[in-house]
View: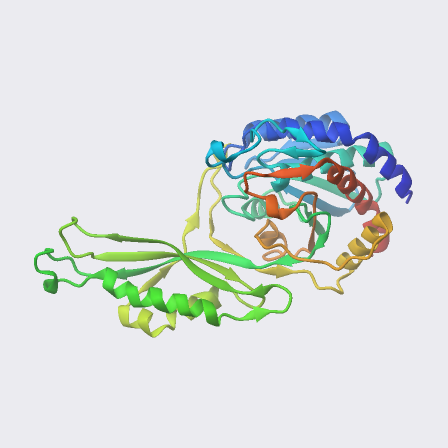
Length: 400
């Protein structure tokens, strides 16, 4: 494989990919509102020569190159978080301003920069005829910020696309990543008995019943297991609510909403059992409810899943990871050790649920994700194109 030819075209197409990034930054695309940006991405995929571009019923855009038997996917979600207080932004979040070689705007790092690089990597593949016995899907997926992995549950189960390897192009600062902690959300409920506030002894206050559980959860966070690679699991309470017939009555229900980050070896069942085994939980007769995400996509489709997002890693000796690192070292002429994300990605489904070998490589630095300094260096687009364009052919020729 001629890396010089790929690098030359990546340099030539840097300006076009940068302009494309600016174009899609200018299209607001919070979760469940991605329709216009999906259409713009599909338009660009067609313009640069993809073999086929479709939108599935959920609203994911699926760009195909090649028709070989080995299926490879490169994934980038196209939804973003909101902008918060506009006054906190130095640069307009929807202008894609260029300053000192950096493009600023909501989604620049997370993760429209990767989408721009992948689309133009597809153009490089077509121009240099780098097709082989593979079918490459470049996917612009939706609703990740609201419910990571939901899109890939749909793609695998309903679109019937099952890759043998997936690249997650979340920001890695042009490094190779091989995993992340998982997470889950749930509520702990206690029930009480309402009574008039003038005679609280006649009732049973659900808030008082949940208070010891809250203290025990605070202590539990200090005791959770750790993993040498992924780090420590964590638990925190993010919201407390209660209910009563009026503000002059004893609370007859209380609930605390929990964010639980899961390290290696921790599962939904093990996390639930940790809470259920607390003496305070048992004494209160409390319940655990795992909420379901069931919001309609921009197409109107609802595809429900529980808010559990599995932990995943790709083993250091796995052929997919070794191949990715080998290619990386050829392209960039430097040694690398695979890292990990601090946040969650669509890999919770591709790797965590479906056990598809998955790794990460993307432009921009994750420290800028979700911030008012959201940004992507233009030279990262150039470098990312090199890897994305080279990987499919290199992979099928390296991994049998």
